[in-house]
Length: 154
Image 1: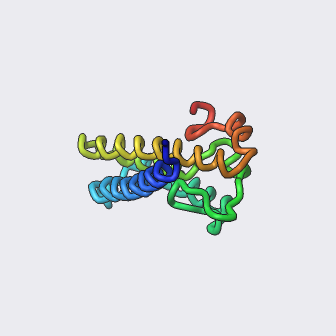
Image 2: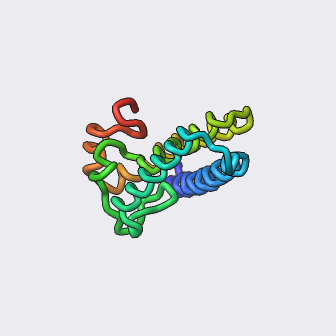
Image 3: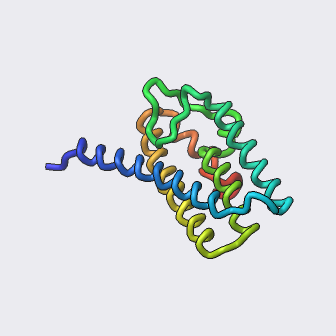
């Protein structure tokens, strides 16, 4: 017989492994980035990414915010602010910050880190959306009117 609790635990472990990988890869990209001599357009993207991330956190509120894809107990669904257009603005903020940093001071190892981070975030958002669909009945309808990660594209 299929054991759903064991499968749920495996998915939970995977979620935490993805969180660890996310922070590890962000750290590796930041550690290999030049602290000085950043190009002006890279600084612009970094500031835009930070602004979007802070706006998303402000909108979702700290008590509802979770670094893992799990839904917090007594969490609430948020569909306003940046969440009107995209379901994962914090992931978008990370990518908006990281990819220009890699492009601005290119190296193949940093490119590999950025590709791996993008894959981790995409896998993590799929797991998160599964949890959200189970936790909030209106979430399925919300997914029909918003983009996952990149407004007007995906």
